[in-house]
Amino acid sequence: MRPKRPTSVLVIAIFHFVFGALGLFWGLFLMLGVLLILSHPKPAAVAPNPNQPTVLAINDYVEARAPFRREVQVAVVLAGLFLSIVLLADGIGLLFYQPWARFVAIGYGALSILYQASWLLYTILCILPLQLAFYDASPAGGAQAQGPDLGGRTGAACGDVLPALGLIYPAIVLIVMLLPSVAAAFQGGRAADDLERRRGRRKRRRRRDYDEDDVDDNNEAQGYDDPDDRFGPAR
Image (cartoon, rainbow, N blue to C red; front, side, top):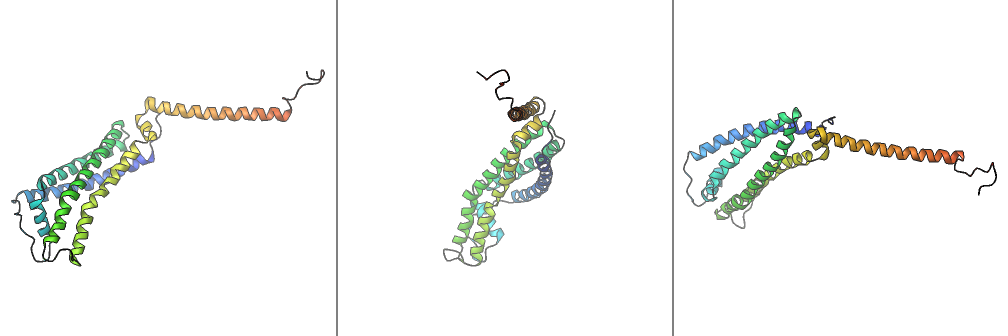
């Protein structure tokens, strides 16, 4: 008999639909932006504008110097779209309790962690140093930078480590799908029967031990364990 589906599986399926739909729409929006960027030539590596730094100026500064910036942007957007489609398809499988859905969820968790970690590593090693260098090279920046410059540096650092939050959900999916109870519930058949059989043996063992203790207590209370001296003293 197949065990009852854990509630965590239903919760994961719902979040799959939510994150998959949001990721799909956001990925399509980002793809339009990437296509717009690719339609323009790569900006020249010019010095920072002496005026107040703007997001566009910082982006041009980073794009002109970051290695494989445009290629990485395209790869990130395509990978995000692919994972969003996987989430939607896997959400349907989890909702209808399909055995393959658990393996797809495990694969999604592993790929998503690899994807998020790679993007985070590239951002920290290649993007963040250039963003900070922009403020250092700007006439308004440098070691004594305060106010807007300090806020810009802090915002750049926080924005670059933000992809680390994307590691949380796939990690949760992996943990839930690798639980023995979830694995047995999805495998069904022999695995589920073995689990139920082991549970039944443990219950019968506990019941037998309880019955034996109860019988011993009754015998002791009724004196069955005392020696019978009706036909003389016990020898």
